[in-house]
Length: 331
Image 1 (cartoon, rainbow, N blue to C red):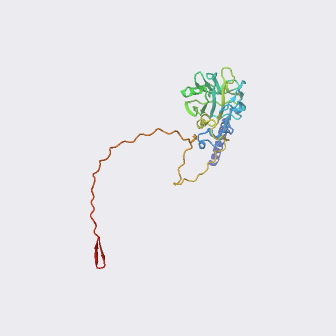
Image 2: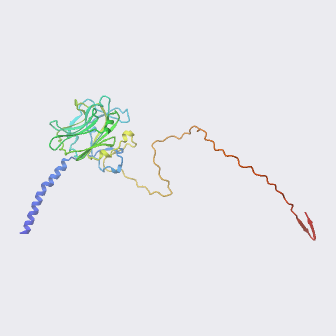
Image 3: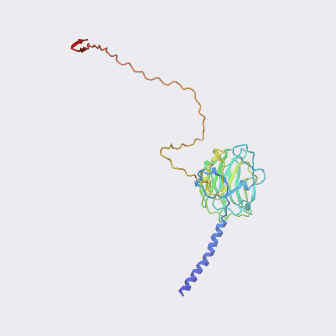
């Protein structure tokens, strides 16, 4: 009797556990599946710290933006006059991860440095905003908004003084790290501000997505846009460097396909007799002979020494005796 009771109890436990297991699978699938993302290798400060698999979305590619004339070291895209709006399913076919990073490189113009515009926005079929990033030139602020679990709109405004440089008509990189309960803003690869946030609702894939659009009239904002990336990793915004802003060519132009870091070449240990390696200076200045310098200072003068006394020396004659046989001669 006890044997059958134990079997029935185990069977009931298994039956009750199955729905929970399937529920977990559905939840993980709803979190989104991100494709592999090819990015430049030099974008990361430390190659070994980045993840083995880089996943995400290149929104400038998704929206098929036309690259402008390469007249500068940082070529930008032409935004044109047509609305930059596409179905969300075309941009995020399998959904968007609940935690992610958004990284954008842009430069505002004189006529738009006070505009209020979306870097990125997703809205549902009814037109309600689900998530958005707004740049407010008049207030020199950045806003991050999303839909909460109660279908309410939650907005977080970042007003750090570090954000003011975004409107000086120079190239800048804006990074946003979205985690479960905190959102961090990075300007030119430095943390500017972070805020604690509430839980977010899932993204409705039946809506539409837009980028670089003015809030006033829904037209593309007149800026120079380099790139908009969304990584499916909230820490990528922190890992990025600003090599392309400081040195536009950034050395080697390699792309990282998101499979594995480049192999590290093993080096033999240093012998004590070998000279230590020197740091590489990026500035190679030619060795030229300079002009002659000014004459140096004269040395200090010291008085002559005391004159010595004369010493008289006398020599006594030396007596030499020479013996020759039995005779003796004196000289």
